[in-house]
Image (cartoon, rainbow, N blue to C red; front, side, top):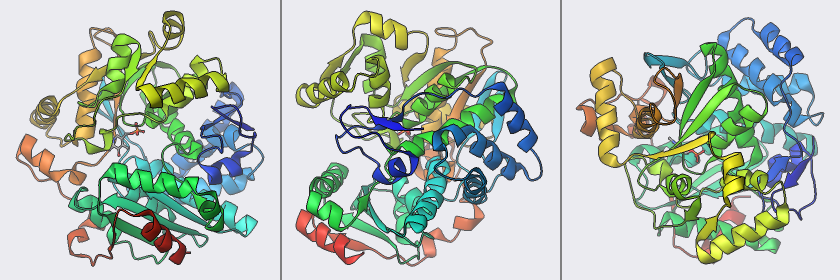
Length: 470
Ligand SMILES: *Cc1c(COP(=O)(O)O)cnc(C)c1O
């Protein structure tokens, strides 16, 4: 399998290079040259792999589903072992259990990994892959990134035991929650570094971009990225759409709490590969650029407003570029132009026949404000005695809004539960009066010693720090 850039001019490369590169040199995102189909013989292999521990089943399943994307760049047995190692860190034997909460209404719990957010499913595997590929090549990289909360902790946990990886994550000082900060600052491994920047999340992102645009610095420090545009993160998320449908034994609609569009894109890819998915509900909070797009066929950027579901407080969904590339019939030049115009003018529109072909009947967008988020959390607690996190609540609210409008009343609908309620205790308390408890492995998180580096919002200081971490 070879990979091409959505902007058409970067060279075509293989799986391991895609893993390490993150972003293509032409500014585009890598996608596989074709979407593989999961055929009957593969399904048979999937079923025969189902033996022993259930978490091993998930890992074996994952290895088979992802095999066409890896191609012959990693030996199949080795890749399977990496998957087994990655998913052995999950606390639930199913890894991603499917829970029925009402007739035809399901939650797919993706938060049983070490840092309690669905990002663990991809980043645990990414960590194992980095370690494997870099030790084979005898290379070392320095991952740099910006985080507004969940990505930092999940990335640290994923690479904490990697010998050939250093990681620096910038976060806005005083603007992440205590749990989120501590999940970064209490990791003991010497190769991970959380840096509090005196500025906003946008300032952090600008610093990271500036480091990547400084070619000399980038090459001297062998910079790498694991943010959600890295293809391997999307690839790892394709798996649970298949495993959920296999557990359900039927086709379904998926409702996906959406920020950067990575998770819902992974579902769309599963559908291209043959998964029996009836459609996608794209769930947004008040930052509803995607909902407005599905209403008007026009993407118009607004200011970001803070909400109870901070991991979805995003203005421009970077992974949407991969869908846009398909809508442009894989014309990289056209995609690049559309996106440059969007960055300049803040507007992007799609002509009606293209929209009808790719979007209508496949995606439906719904929004859910903070009040609806709290009401949904309260309703689930009252009816099922279950606590759900605010991101999951946005997804569930959107799912409920779509039933009877886009889908029949008896449609099976699976909402992706993207975070554990204990990650957002304040919102859970406000909605239900209950305080969710952290799982045992994190019970003493609030008492662990923190290691914090604080830096000004200044490129030279941050670059000097990154160089010193090599
Ligand atoms: C990252 C995140 C999302 C958004 O996922 P995307 O792939 O960026 O659309 C939703 N919920 C939680 C809890 C997250 O951490």
